[in-house]
Amino acid sequence: MAEEKSRKMASLAYHALEDKKGAEISVIDISKVSVIADYFIIASGENRSQVQAMADNVEETLGRAGYPPKDMEGYRNANWVLLDFGDLVVHIFDRENRVFYDLERIWRDGTRTTIEELEKQDQ
Image 1 (cartoon, helix red, strand yellow):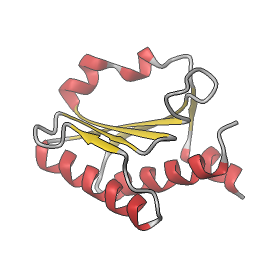
Image 2 (cartoon, one colour):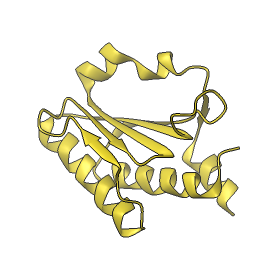
Image 3 (cartoon, helix red, strand yellow):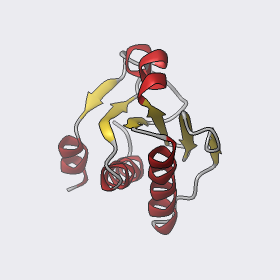
């Protein structure tokens, strides 16, 4: 199972996305199917400004908790922003690109989890 640090990072990112009204937030545990990361979080924003605000909030929230991003891509165009925190990768899409890239289908071998399940494991 994904380690405690990864779960904490995923929980913080989830709430940071939620705080900026991110839509359709999905958490996928990929720890058993990939060495890329333990978790993917995928969320949608309505427009460029919201996608950037969501990315800023995730970066700030995790940074304050001691988890600065290793890399960020796509911020300027903001149709798909990728934030790489090592054990956690956050994907923030506009709606059109989320449907086009369909990461949930690509990573269907991972385990979908809810924020409640993620936080229950931390207790």
